[in-house]
Image 1 (cartoon, one colour):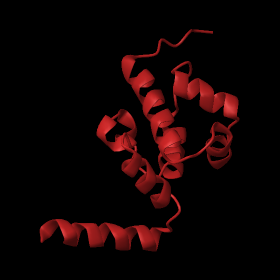
Image 2 (tube, rainbow, N blue to C red; image 1 turned 45 degrees about the vertical axis):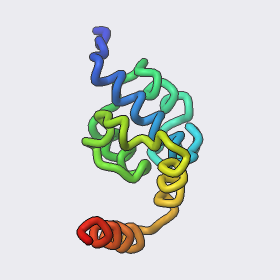
Image 3 (cartoon, rainbow, N blue to C red; image 1 turned 90 degrees about the horizontal axis):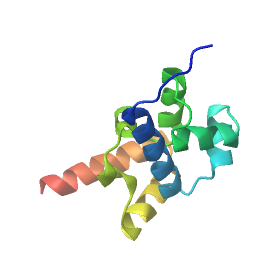
Length: 112
């Protein structure tokens, strides 16, 4: 069996998954349950020990309420300040209709 060498982007994706999970207040077990893997597997993804399959990456993005592109790592989006973390935690509790309404409201706010 050949050994897969992880690239820096694999490690970055793992770090971003962890940052977003923590910002949303989710445990590794909760994220694992949402994507159908064990907390140990989530731990391996986050450490960069295992590469995340594309199909799993789609599930992770859905569970973390972000796009797959976001998982490639934009540290600005990971909730660095207390207010960002609070917003991300509240955002995760919204359903799709509510999050669409909030996004539209914010867009209107920014155009004024």
